[in-house]
Image (cartoon, rainbow, N blue to C red; front, side, top):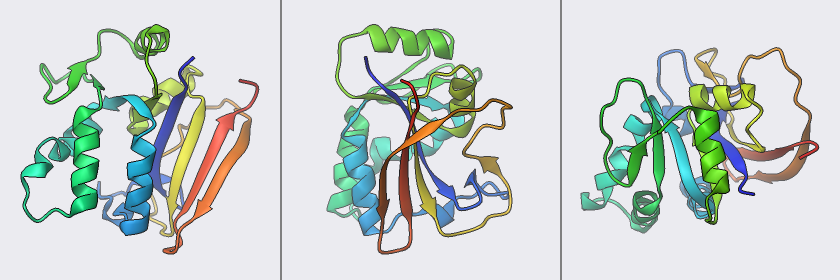
Length: 188
């Protein structure tokens, strides 16, 4: 069965977006960007909320930017080919290799897990991930922790009064002080 993963950059104090709505502090250096490229290779389908979908729309046409280097062009090619499912109550249409969700999050994940295919079901966006976590649908939490305290904003981890035991699967420290942590939900 395909695993559901939630992976995003996060400040040391636990936020994916700061109180001002910005996340420039999470701009990856070359080493971390290479990591994200390798990470996206293992994804079979990406589930996104509206805000992250709109942020990532840049990559649908980024290959037309002559100033991009080889790593950015590699990311663009991988992102454009990747099937995406967008959860939104306000968007009537989506672009690129994306489609609107056909139902609720649990039903969509159940359908995707049942379909033949390789690669993980990745969830992007803290709000969508919080819903998946509340439903017990996330198999792995992957944080790329940046050495910064932003003091508030949108948290990586949902604030539910529910305990979830995790098992450490992998860690990696980058030269910039960024740390990758991968935890699997215990007993799965």
